[in-house]
Image 1: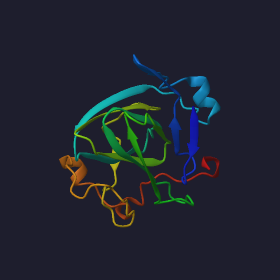
Image 2: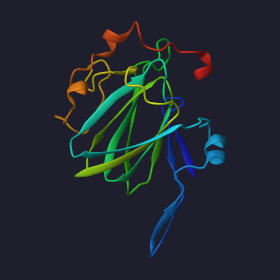
Image 3: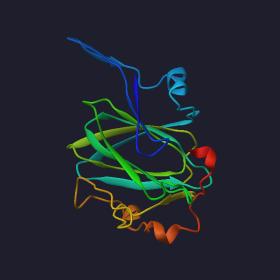
Image 4: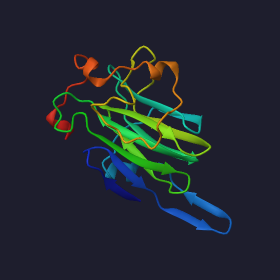
Length: 187
């Protein structure tokens, strides 16, 4: 597999080897030893699968008490996937990185704890799969507004379909007192 570092240290794009022939294809979506050797040393405890319609935007989500590292991929369709550094004191605080993930390119993205995460669906439908390094806790779920002007994320859609919860998320400036702190060991 090819592991690509992004402008945000810790956020990685993974291009797995795909073996194709007339019958179809095969690829490994996770191999602990290979991912650990590539810098992803999480123990994943939960796998999730969502299906979303074109124009849906989910995020930007994070947990505070039980922060989650996420290894994400798309098994059908295409999304634009985004990670935002929300660690107060980080030299990359408020910066974002986005990558197109699809069933055609088979790319994955690793989003470490301390980052908000979201995606928007560009195809008619998309099946989005992700491994999490901690369990989902609905009482701990937090989020940042997808259209926070301070983040200036260049989403490839203008008027996304949002859940009521995501439509009501605050801007990052309103969350400053509760965001996680950056530690030098996180570089």
